[in-house]
Image (tube, rainbow, N blue to C red; front, side, top):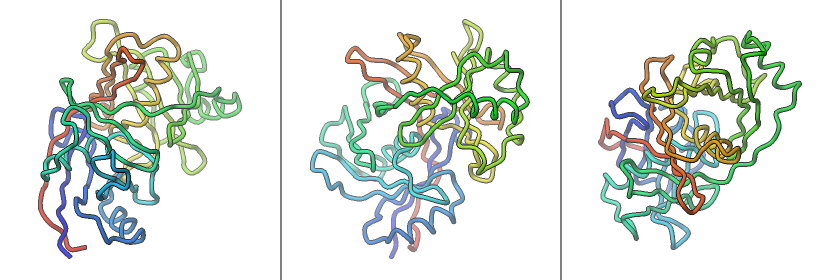
Length: 278
């Protein structure tokens, strides 16, 4: 049957400089196999499928697929699916706070700021075993003195994170030196000089849409924000840059609110709209 289809670009003010997302608006009746096969065919990092919600408090339900598997949660599919749902005529219960049902539960998307922002889901924070961090440092041919923090974060996806001394060191890393499936997804973080447009440079090293890294990763930035908050290092709005090394202009806006929640925001552009036979 014909189904409404949108392809959007997330986490950038400039269309096609963010992270692409395919969205099937009318996904009712599709089997798991059909969704997985279509996600593999799009060859994007993620494809989402929208359904009426099972939870009456939610506005819609989303299922998120990478080319190889279904995902519990992902950041740019959350903001992109919300933008596509609204563009297709979705009417929320509360226009200030859209509630998305997904595999990890209800994710709220705050619509009151300068950009839509989802509420960061809970993130578990653990030490990254020295054996794992040393293996990564060796594989990436880093000077161990450049690595100022290591941590393992879990907000659905699991992230092995290395914080380097500065953004230039993050951008200098050669992503092709890491091989999969030997490693889990690797997050890199480094601060820009004070007064720069962005506060941190982020990279997520893992195969994505035929590339060796993901353009802009909302779930990683969300996990990093929770970690920075836990460390007492997130007390005002900050901006993360991602995708610089692969000619993208990703910007993720992170803001703690007075209730202890963390908002993860970004812009979305609708790039392609039409119907598909599926």
